[in-house]
Figure: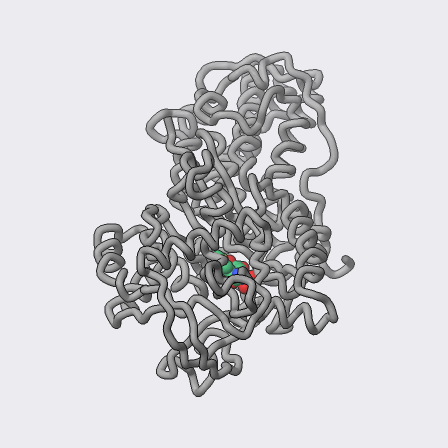
Length: 517
Ligand code: MSP
């Protein structure tokens, strides 16, 4: 049996409206989860990071309490993910009791095992990134990550003994060179490790919006737990750490997706926290690139946020999902523009895929009374795509597991192209004219089977449009079923047998004209 699969996204700061970058990571996690569900049990977690100075400031600016503010905004994130056809298994909010109690228990456990101790922190703090910085790391006196002003902080704080884990981290990195990807991020983290690690301040004295420090000072206004310590733990508290059944089933995570700006937290601090409580590090942390506009990372505070709801409305959520995964190798930055999205939508999706479905169904109607014909002899198409040695389903599953989404879509497009070519070269209209009914029927059968495969293969990427393909084909049963069964053969698995009546409908991807739109 396949090991249960667990994929996570970062939890998002609730400091403004969600943007396309938030949809991006979550869509990728959804593709991984949907793909994993075709092989066995899978669990996808996303959620919101609601504590910290940054959220408290945003709430204050709007004249709200942080709790009112986050309660109001969380539904927007949930609506965003629904608008992008994301089906998560759980949505964690760090203000939930299940999380707060577990975080306090972990803090307490670390205080007991000596990994958490009281010390004095003096140094710089970036509120926007909720990050402590050494003076030597500042860039011209500003935050080296976001370029904003930093604040001088001097207070008595609780510390996590991060330095203690440096050797174990080094050994872990050396023994598992694939555990942080891409390689550039792995190398960057190794360089930090080689320089050495300082202990980490994990409390904030002058902040009230957070999880209270447990123990003797609890509730006395003597500070809260540092937001990153609180936030990272969401990945295990959501599963019911320490002895919840989900935790026992799904931990360690198969893949933790993050943006590259938060790699240090997830690949140096996070494994150390886990080891401190006797848990295993995740199998893979993948730090992806940024969506940019004119070379700048999209983000609310940079003032170039694009409304992700409007984009899904305009192009269709599945076209957006396709664009996000097809546009660049996963891991690289890529720039966003409506022209690029429209091109992908009109060309790859409308011309290549949508027209293939429309042409095929029209021909089945015209030449075969709208009924899927009997198969002919074994054809070159089935040999090329369904042969065990070159099986397209296996290739796509392998590429998705490796997070090579662009390559997986390119592989799927080999089938799209081959089916279009079969129509162009074999000219069904001539076969019909010449009365070569047998050949015509065999070709139509092949096209229908090819489209059945495409609907199944594309389902993790474009769940709603793939389901519509499935519906128009007249296919029965579950499109999201086990690939080993549904793609076992080119021919029929019972979902699209000869004799099935096709149900042609509207164009899958109606053309979008940017000028007149
Ligand atoms: N709350 C922290 C994460 C805590 S995880 C324990 C945080 N939140 S965030 O809202 O600022 O950003 C979260 C994630 O959004 C990033 O890591 C990244 O995955 C995604 N993105 C934000 N802007 C993005 C782009 N412009 N492009 C791609 N992804 C982006 O950091």
